[in-house]
Every structure is written in structure tokens, then in C-alpha cells.
Length: 565
View 1: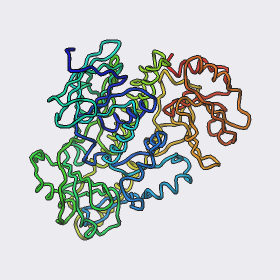
View 2: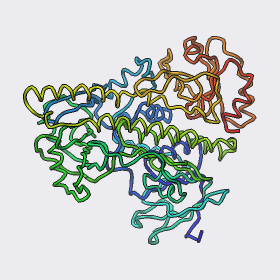
View 3: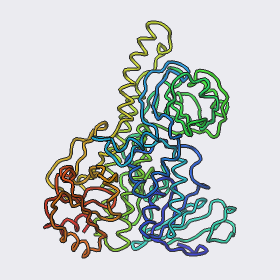
View 4: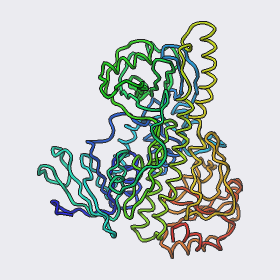
């Protein structure tokens, strides 16, 4: 590449400062890996975007040390988090799923068992708040250089490293390390590049990686163009005749829409279906007020903070997640219809999976198969999760909203009973999803050392905790009030369970020889030994069970395979 004004060297260059890129910077920063993150936006998100942080994502935020900070944002602690369906917001209520408030989630989590035994429960919080926290966390690591207002212009994979050029998008925005000389261009030399740069990813396109899966699905709702409005409506609750919720869905023949409460008071993220023949790209604030009134059932004053269009109906997964020293993650690697809230949460887990592997490769403790495992593990998960999201979208979006739903009298009553029955089943299908949340697995990964057992069937609405290698470790609360997950090491954890666990010295010796940061964590209760169905279990840095067994005789073989050797 030609000679930009100066050369910066770093370990990992991240293109994209959304949740995926920021979580990756945090994962790398806490491991002392030098990281440069660039994003052309002036800062983190203004619009609410994703509005639900799933329980598994909250467990990762807990592991990283800021789950409480995330839980303090979004809805007030005592605000309902229900999902409710109406003909219109001032019309008939059709169905509702009642869910715990943020305060109740904190109080009740220790009493949850079975499918919902977890260190953290879900939290309803807009992505704009989460991104601000993630940015502060990423910038708290001295090895991280986080630059908004900068974009990746070009890159070349040279085999031993990646050469790239980044440039300042807004020359008036000062940076802490660069003088102002018009539009700055800087050459960057990094060992690895990660494209977390969104649906139109420049990195994915430059690599020539195409999409697999489906797109262009048409539905009455959640299929085709959608009109998004970020609005302030201080008088909403003055005219809203029902109990408060977090998600409000309107189901009528004129205009179907959903709306999430952003702050529990007056701000909402509103999304309406666009009909065939309508040109929503040309819609103005007046149209935003008109469309909102259709879902509302009456006109109330609103302040339009922003509006625009997006497309539902995607179930796309990139054909590859890696080319040489370059990786893609988040929306650059998979595009969802947002039913189930799976896109943002899947993106976070991409970063969690990739972060420890990049760090191991840079530190010299990774085998040759470790980085290759990223795509092997994450691509099937993306295909699984996009399929679930598509199923949820079909369930709600293909259900016809007929005019009779809003009629008085016997015919209207019958139609509303039918709709209520369908939507009551649907809301539980889409929003009570411990199986989706906790049941993702890496079966078939070269890093997973199987033990001959099979995991329980994958199901959206049920999760059976299992230590069968390849999935999330079973969770339990300890007698001292801690989560079992709180005792896991930041690196590799060898759980030694039960009153008389086997000797673990073979694992400790093998880990030292391979340069792996392993800690033996002992828990004597027999109930934990029973929960894991073995006295020993090896847990990866991303809290995935890599192996379980009865003794340490195979320690060297297990650790070599689990670390990609």
C-alpha cells in the first residue's frame, strides 16, 4: 500500500463500533491485546435499534463485570416488561405475556430453576444505552484505541499480517493522537482484521464472501419494508386504556406495527409495516404522525426524533466467516428478521467466541485449528438462530389481521377470541425462549472432546441443562449466594466436583506445557457432581464445556484438542 502520513501497528484492527465490535474490543482489551477499533459514525447509536438483551448475553456481561450497569439502564426498575397485543393501542387488548420487572428479575433469579436456572435473566434495554456502556468499557483498557468518525478504507492480507488504510470521516473531529491536517489517512499494520461493519460490510464484500439463506420473504407483518420512528409521546399513557407493557403490538387490517418502550416514560421505538405500493423512503414527519395514529387508534401529539426504513424478511448467513487473517462477525456475517431479538445477541456471542481465540493466537498458545474453529462453530449457530427468527416471523406475520377484528358484536367477538388464541400461543413461542437463549451448541467442532453422550433435543421453548461437551455449562447457585459461573476462571477452568474428586495434577501439568492459563476450581457438593454427571469438566474461556470425564488420565490429549492443536 502507498504511504499514508503515519504507520500505526496493532494486534487486531476492528472495523465497526456496534455491540459486536465493542464486545470484541473488551474481550481483547482485558487480555492485554492491542486493538484499534474504527467506526465512521460520530459515536454510538442514537436510535434505539435492538431492544432486548437475552439472558445468555447478560451472563457474558456479568462475566465481563458490567451486567449491573446494563441492568440499571432502560426501563425503570419497577416498569412492566410485558409483551401485549391490541387491535390498536386504544382498542381491544388481544393477548399478553406478563414478565418480571428489572427489579423482580434481580430478586427472583436465585429462585429460578430448570430451563431458567441462570446467573442473569433477560433485560429490556435499548441498544443505544448498551452501546454507550460498551464503549466506556472498551475505552477503559489502555491497550484499546477506539475511534469513532474513522472508517476502514482498504486492506490487504499479506499472509503474516494485514495492511490497511483508515481515514477520518469528519476532519473537524479531533483525535487524541493525530494532528488535524484535513482528512487524515493512516496506514495500519495489524496481525488480524475483524469486519464487524454491519449488513453492507465493506470487509465481507472485499473478501468476496456471498450470502446463503433466504431473503425477500413477504408477509403482512415482519416481511418487506418497515417504517421506523424514534419518537417522544408524553401523553401516551394519558390515553392508553390498558395496563402498561414493554412491547406494544397493533394487529388490524389497516396498519400492523410494534412499539417498544425506550425509557418507560415517553420515548418509544415504533415500527410499522409498509404496504405494497407505498413509498416509505419519501415519507416525512407528517407521515410518521399519520402512521403512528393508525396504530394508536387516535391522534396524540408526538415529537419525531428520527425516522427511516429498513427491510424485514432476511434470514441470511455468510458463506464463510474467515479468509486468512480476516474475519467477519455480527451483521456482517448474518442478517436477521428481528423477531425473537436474536441478531444483536448472536453478534455478541460471535465476539465472545472470537476474542479468546485471537488472544491465544497472538500469545502463542493456540494450535493451528483454533482460529479455523471460529467459523466452524459460529456459522451453524447463525443458521440455527436465523431459522428460529424466521419461524417466529412466520408465526406472527402470516397471521391475517381481518377487518372483523374491530367490529362490534358477535362476529367481532369471535374473531378477537380466535386472534387471542393464536397470539397467546405466539407470544410464548417468540418470547419465552430458554432453549434458543441457552441451547446453542458447538457439536461437531474440532475443539470439542465428545464423551459419547447426546445432548437433549434443540427446542425454542424448553432447555434441559446438560454438561454434554459442546454447550453452556449447567448453572447453579452456591450455598454462599454466588453463581457457579462467578467461580469460573477468566481463562480455562477445570471443575473438580463432589466430595472426593480425582487428582487434577495431570491437567495442571499439561496446561503449563501448552502455555494455557488454567485454574482448577473445586466444589464439594454432591449435587454439582450429579448436575454435571461427572467429577471433572473442562470449561473454555467463553464458558463452553469442552470435555467432561471421570479422571485426568487423558489430560494432555484433551487440552491439545480443546486448544486447537
